[in-house]
Figure 1: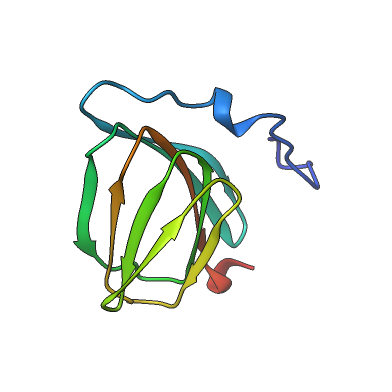
Figure 2 (figure 1 turned 90 degrees about the horizontal axis):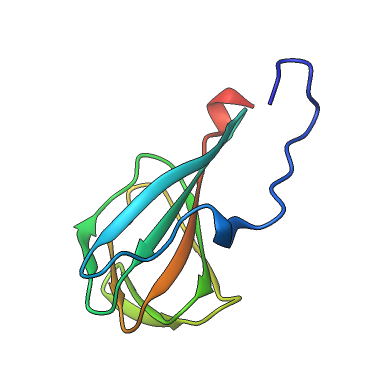
Length: 111
């Protein structure tokens, strides 16, 4: 993306990252005004332990099945599933099977 670009298009997010055996990997795929998008690839049984984010986030599953525990409540997300978390909500992610997750961090300060 150049400074003169009004938009960025990514044809297929699933091509940006691959599941690695017994690992969780991440890769930033977009950083623009007001948003940073990070892809996560989880092998089955992998997890991100409870943590918080300094800004609101959107989580969307592209492949697999993830359990998202947020503020003490667990939701199962399947492909197409979407979850919004407010700033500093404690949350954790567990992969029941190999999975791809899109994390969009929404920063209104840079809009």
